[in-house]
Amino acid sequence: MTGKTTRRTAPLKIWSVLLASLALVGALGAWLTFGRDTAAPCNGLPEDGRVQKSVGADVHPGMSCAALGQAIVKATAAEQGRHSQEQAQAVKDVFFSPGLGYTKNLRIDAALRVPLATVLADFADDTHELLAGLDSQYVVKGDPDDGPWETSGTYHLAVDNLVFRNVVHAVSGDPQAYAILRLAETRYVAQQLAAVPGDATEGALSLTPTKNARALGILDGVADTFARDQAWRTAVRDRLLREPTTQGSYQEDPAAYLTATWLQGLRNTPEAELANRLRTQGVDIARTWTQERNTDEFTRQALLAEVDRSALSAYREAKS
Image (cartoon, rainbow, N blue to C red; front, side, top):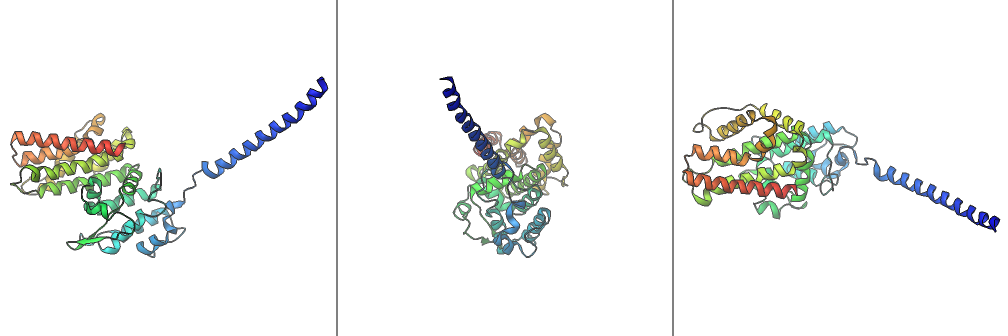
């Protein structure tokens, strides 16, 4: 009886060892296939035919990511403050490339983060509208096949909201890239506030600062995972403060004054309060703006409360 049991058990042991070996081989194969970083170099942009065509002959398979970044910036930079249809289309082709676009958990090659942030900063008006998400033009023309459109002698582009936020989040991992985006948005919102008529009231007065706060709030929320790191926040602050500013009066240059005043406040902010200082930027700039406009106290407080709600809502939306 004992001998029979031993003979039956032996094959079972052999099968157990064989199955375990097969499982180990399968696990190893899965790691080799999925566990390694299999992303194409430079997010596959040099091999993308549409990118090659729109960015230009400088783009070719096997090129370095640094050279690719330079080529994209060069091909899309505004000339005398205006973008051509080809330049706007080139940006759109890059963003919708299979290596970026709708990629889940997008990671952009480190050498491309600052160049792509530079491109977004150069298209500051479009970036602002895409962050705020309130202009229907940027919603209906955000699909890959929707071309750029022209207004006032320059071309604009729209990108699907998911694609846009994925790219902004991915480049924001580099604090230098994020600072470029932040500074461009800071200058743009200051320009928008400066353009509000002096006699504006009610909705005409509140629309611009609340929209600005929403755009800045989205920028806060998209980068929330990085902003928890003190070194990242410090690097962003240091890069922002290296930017030259003109400290004149509000009457001489309202936009420059608003930008310089906010940056000075950032300079005086303790390290531990940097995150909060960035998140209150919309309110801080609006406060300076209303003070310089001599807005009455009741209107100012009501407006600042509305601006604060706009920023907080956008921040929560983007980080969720």
